[in-house]
Length: 240
View 1 (cartoon, rainbow, N blue to C red):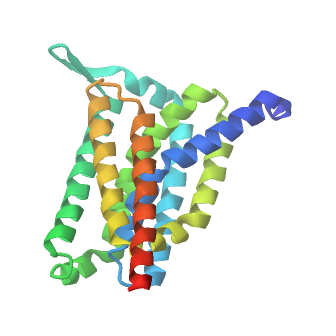
View 2: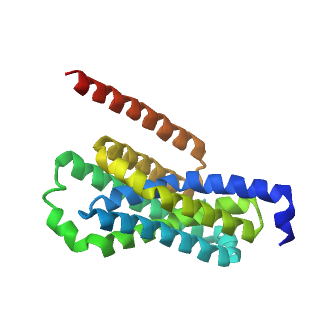
């Protein structure tokens, strides 16, 4: 444990914690939008926090399997010039699932099918939503752990960063979720961002590297513009 007496260790911990929170934005958005289908506010809060708790468990399990995770980039099979590893397959199916789910949610909001499907959604409800969250947790966690390995090789530091970042996200998940729930335009913006993330995951699966910073910058820029629009709309209503 002498590594925690080094200044560079604490710098790595701080950097990795911040990175985990940033990389967790897509997970928070997915959980917030998905749990909005639950009619009861207590169930929404419970599902959000359970979703992040499962993400924490998955990440820590992946740390225990870190040796296998590192070797997951080795090709499983070749198809012409293309070679696919376990990592590529996970990113591919995760990206396709995100594209399908986000597009479906946007279609329901635009076509107004949400109310018509309310009875069917209630049957799926809590258990079905938690299963979908866990599936995406696996994809996001896999990508997160591989990024963490690039920053530090110390498992205790990675574990601490993951735990701290998840605790922070669990504390604020209800605030974020309720805010998104109150503003349908933010839900559509979040779903559009998840479509971009899904496309990014598929591109990575086929070895096309797209800097994630561009995607996150585009999202934050759009988010700030939408906040300004919401403020303008609010002022217009007050002046009428």
